[in-house]
Image (cartoon, rainbow over all chains, first blue to last red; front, side):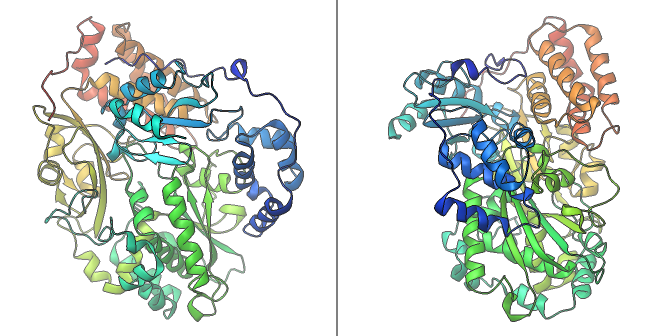
Length: 182
Length: 437
C-alpha cells in the first residue's frame, strides 16, 4: 500500500531532460491572436488582470511558456519580465519546459489514492515508456505527472490527457487509451 | 440526483434536477425548463428586496464557511459611487468536492442566471466567474452559456431590457488550490500570485481592483433563482433540523462506497441513512471505517460519530466535524489511515502559497513526519511533535490553509491513534483481503 512513486516535495528536474531545441522565437501576439488579447483587455479595468489569460494564449500557441514568451507578454501588459516569471512559477499549469505531445496528469490525492490511483500512475509510466514522473518519453509523445485533486473524485481515477478529462481510469484501461491517441 | 446514477427517491432535487440532460445545457433547453424567469422577476424588484428575500430564506454560503448569503450581500452599500464586483468562486479544488463541476457542466445557464441575479442585488455591473484551469469541460460549457446569454440580450449592456448593465466574464485559473480562498482568488484575478490577503479590509470594502466585492460559491448563486421563484418560506421549510440550516445541499460522495456521485438532500438528513441507503453502503466484504464529510479540510469522523450525525451546519459540528463544502470522502477498513492522512498532508504542503512561516514550514514538516511513520520509521515522540506543530499551525496565519493541514492530522491522531502507534512499534497494517464486487 505504501506509495513508492512520490519523491521529495521538490519539482522534478525537467531542465536536464529538455530535448526540445530552442528554436528562434517568433512573436505570439500578431494578427488574430493580438486581436484576441486586445479583446481580453476590455474585460478588466487593469492591464495586469489579463496576465493569466495572456499566458494561457502563449501556452496554447507554443505548447509551453518560454522566457521569451514571458518577455513578450510583459511588454504588452506594461509589466516587468521578472514580475511575469514570478506569476508563471506560482501556478502549476504553465509549462516552463516543453512537454510531450500528450501531457498526462493522474490525480493521486487521497480520495483517488484510496481507490487505487497509484496503480494507474504505475501503468501510465510503464506503458508510455517514460518510467519516471515529469520526464518526456524518448519519442516525445508522453509526459506523465501526478496532479493534486482534479475535482472529479467520484470518478476515481480521473486523468487529464491534454485538455480532456477521462473519468474512472484503471490500470487495465491504460493501454487502450494510449492506443487511441493519434 | 445521485448523478451519475438514477435519482434516489429520498433525494430532493432542486439544483440537480437536470443533471445528465444534455439539452439543459443550451439556452433553448434551459428556457424550456423555466430558465431565466427568476432573473426576469429579479430585475423587476428593488435590489434591497432581493437581499431581504435571500436573508429570510436562510441561505448560507455553500463553499465551506457557511456565511449567511443575504447578510454578505447587504454589506455592499448601494450608491457609494464606486464600481461593485461580483466574483463567482468556481475554483472547486477541495479534495472530495465535485458538485460545482456537475452544476457547471450540466446546468451552465443556471449559474449565469444566478450570477446575474447576484450582480443586480449588490449593484455590480461586472461578474467574474473564476473557474479552475483543470476544469476544461465546465469551462467549455460556461463559455458557451455566457456567449448564448449575451447573444440573446439576457446579459450585457441592457440585461433583459432592464436598462441595467450586467457583464459576465469567465476567467480561467492556472492550477492553485489556494485561489479558492476568496482573497487569493481576487489577487489571482488581478494578475498576481495567488497569495491570500490579510483581512480587514474585507472584500465588501476593498475587494478585487480595490473596489467593493462580493464572492459567492457556484452552488450558492445557483440556489438564488429557485428561492426567487418559490419564496423564502418554501426554502426555509426544506429542513429536517436546525432553523439555521435551510434548503437543499449538494453532497459529492467519493472513496470506498458503492455509488459515488453527487446527491441532493434537504438539510438535516440523517447521515447514516445517506451513506447506507442513498450511497449504497460499503464495497462488498468491506466495512466503513471513517468519513471526512466536508472536503479534506474538516476533521475526520469515526463511523460512530458519522452515523449519529444530521447533515447540516450544526449537525456536523455536533458530530465532531464540519459541513464544509459537502465533499464526503468515505474510507473503508482496507485503508491504512496513516497513508490516507500522509497523502492529505502532502496535498496541503504542495498547495501552501508559502507566505506564512507556520504554513510553509509546518505543512512540509507534517508531511515528512507522517510519511516517516507510514514507512515504519516513526518514533514515539513523533506523535507529540505532530500535535505540537499542528497547534502552532492553527489560527496563526493569514488564511486557513495551514489550519486545514493540521485538522486531519490532529483529528486522525486523536481518533485513530492505535494505527499510528502500531506502525511506530513495527506492527504493520494488514488490510482486509476481501474481494471487491
